[in-house]
Image (cartoon, rainbow over all chains, first blue to last red; front, side, top):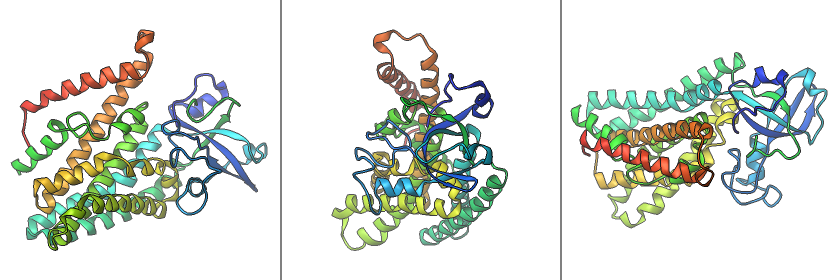
Length: 178
Length: 193
């Protein structure tokens, strides 16, 4: 994913303002939902969505491979107006706001870590033993994951985590050039 | 408390993982074209380094040291790191599929980040207690994230700057990285660890 492209149409600009973009391919149309798969490139660093390096999606299949990772990252666009115009194989530029990405990262990683470190500090202060501290920290981590789940639900309800359709990708456009 | 603070400042700034120990340079150059992706990668790495360090410390203390299996340290730590990444991926997917869609892209990259293994090996050398080891790992990864975000900010500005054609792209990025490393050397006067 990369910065918003300055040449996109004006109608899309407001939605794409300060967004993180990436290219995804429509793999299935399911009623009012279009299921998309992030695009995969063949070499390291060309695309942040690369699940692995140096192997094409066709070459890899099975558990833990590129194909299975891409399938695991399938997502849907819930946009009735737009979905009717999509077809399987269409390449779309989708985006999420920068703030949403940061909020998501803080929720997924920051909250559990904060809970674990605070719990570890308190247990160490109370008992002063490594084994107890370790158990306290693990408990804190579990509590933090529960807190992350609650906050993630709240963010999802507000629609902050949903990717948005920005425009169709140009034929020469890759996830490294968006 | 003062020792903790000094150790954490030392790990984050003075002996910075990237600019002083030169670990994690692949992600340092590869994922720092934008501040938001650098921040996402930094947070993901912070989580994985801290969680894997907790597991590394436990395995080192209660298994490798206890049974004289120190020679298996590196391979064991690699296994723990890979498991920690997998655990994180599975947990985030379970906790929130939406979060996984947004953040899952960074996780596979962390498995091959040498900073994670480097911090784990430094913990063993330090012979620290559990909380100290975890705080050291956390501070090291905060230092890693800090440098990633600063460098990403600089690179975003470099795109807008009028850089001579011969220096445009990676060359000027390397020069800026060198200047950033020299700037961080200034922290060595604050604390030692």
